[in-house]
Length: 363
Image 1 (cartoon, rainbow, N blue to C red):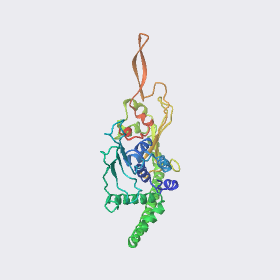
Image 2: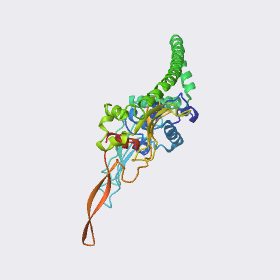
Image 3: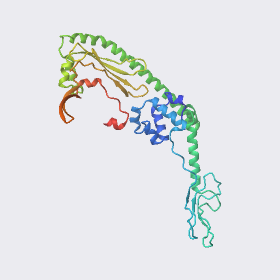
Image 4: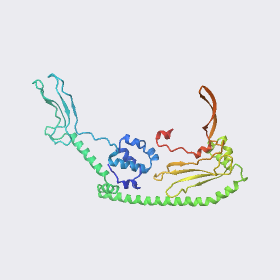
């Protein structure tokens, strides 16, 4: 069952998609469902990390993948003998195991002879007259050989499988395939160089923009341009829909918005920082929203988002509203006030968990 060693499965040579295809092809649905691996590959790859796939691969390789049992080589259909009387008899419908000799019948349908002479034995034999296997046996033998070859391929490492594949090609074709491999290696090197230069260019661009953004903050701060950032957010196509009437007095104190794509080594993603001046609504000076991307995924897939716990001052939380509810206790009815969540721009800093199931994602 092991197609790669664990070290190979963890390496870049084996992608998440390769691992998922192997798991979905070799494990039962119930086992896959327990590990959130059922569904379209694209959707599964977005919600499952490579570490989780490698762990599942290790479990499957160790024999805990719940593989379906192979069908038996023989079958029987028999009736129990009746309690009495000579009219009933046992009968058996069976096929011999595939490992039998070539001269054995493909299958037989027979009834045993009873004590009475009335019951004559009979049998249907579909083997060839010469005792050689029929065409179905040849097909089964070819299928068995193909399965054995496929299993042998899966037991090889990626490098061994590559060498075995090349060895099976004609010499002329093998040379062309090897030439294609070299072209692909050169293409991969060009892509890596491009990615590195693009990352460096982005960093250079951010460094050049930093003093410009600092000058902008100085120009609009204080009495420079009143409600500058509130106006910017209200003019944004998507964010404007999130801003409620109760949010506007709070956003009037927003002094600057900064973005950083440097979260540390091995941490792809970015962070937004909202800087506020002193205000009567909350104690925080900065509210942040951090987006962490999956470092093992080839595409930029969101792994999780982190917000900020806003320290609202008493009675100033715009993410909740006070509602009156009637409460009945010991035959008496009283009216109480309770908090209920409400729409607000500041819910942006309390992101939901990333859904793991396709159904949750659709909802």
